[in-house]
Each structure stands twice: as C-alpha cells, then as structure tokens.
Length: 254
Image (cartoon, rainbow, N blue to C red; front, side, top):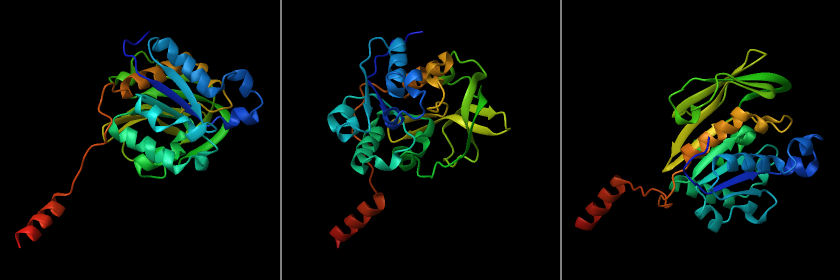
C-alpha cells in the first residue's frame, strides 16, 4: 500500500548503538542503522516524500531550525543517550510540535527529554529483556493507525515493557501488548499537544530485527500518515490569561 500524501519526514536516531557496535549483531540487522532501516521502509509507503535521517552526532543533532521548519513528521528513536540531547534542541522540537509538526516516538524514546516534557510525566515503566515473544493486540480497530494491521502482531523476540507506564491518559489507546511472563503494556497510544499530533509505539529494541517486520513497518507508515498535517502554519497556538487582561483594564481605568 502506498499513501497519496507526501509529508517531509525526518527519522532521528541516537546512533550510539551503531557507533559502538552494541549489540554485535546490530550491523547485520541494520547495515544503515536503525534510522536507515526505518527511512527505507517509509520510502516504500511514501514514494513522493522527502525522507532523511539525523543522529545525535550531527551538528545540532541534525535538527536545526531550518530543517524542522520544513519537516512534517519527526520520528524519534532513543535509548542510552537521552541526557546528551541538548535542551536548546528539545526546546526547538517542542515548539514545532506545538505548532503542528507530527511526532512519532519509538521504543525507549518513551524516556526522551522531548516526550517527558510534552507529556509532563516520568514516562517510566517496567521492563525485562529476555527475548520473549510479544503479541501486539489492536484494541481500537477504527483508528487510522490500525488500518490493515493484524491482531495480534506476533513478534518472536522483543524486550518486555510492562505496566505501570507513567503517562497521562492518552487520547487514543490503539495497541496493547502481552508477553510470555504475563505482563501487558499500552504499546500504541496517541496524544495531542498544541496543534501537533503524537504517536508512541513501543516495539523496536536494538537487539532484535523488529523494524524489518512487515506489520511493524505498516504501523509506522500509518502513524506517519496520521500525525502529518501538511501545510499548517507552524506557529504555536497563542494563549493568554483573561484574568491578567482584566486587571490591566482595571488599572487603566483608575
């Protein structure tokens, strides 16, 4: 399936695991890095789109003002270097999300500076990495992100993420995962912040070739299509405090 929309897409990845060759199989699973694999997958779904990648090591992490201004959707994969992301870049990304840029946060990006700031919670969770089977169950089949998705998606090996997942009540709960140890996890959720849409999707640990799974690739493409809002004015919503204005008027009248 190809989408008719042509959003400008940037796939961001720390790139730390690839640089350290950790795990040793990561180069075999993802010769162009996790970001490269995701970008190549999205190119199959959005053949008319400009799709590029960026990493932590790039100047300004590859997320300059000019680049973000021309980006409709930013995908974010993070894991072990959340603290190394510059706050000025986080400020910039936040402003663009509030202004209407779509954000797709992947796997351990739940603990990224950008998501915890946008959601206002710790986004902490329970986890265990024993290479267990994960079943991703669709619980909101009417949502566009669930279009064409099997239920369950069967992932043979994956890191376990389990509740409690410290996030606010999501706008949409689309996917719930279950694991061999009995844990469950809200693995696919959406939020809106300002004029921007956010989709968080958890499967995708660096030790397993999850981003080659056809159904996972389809979920990411659906997510990109849904969060993309092309042509929007990127300025953040203007808000004011009427109480402040009221007091100003009273002072002027005195």
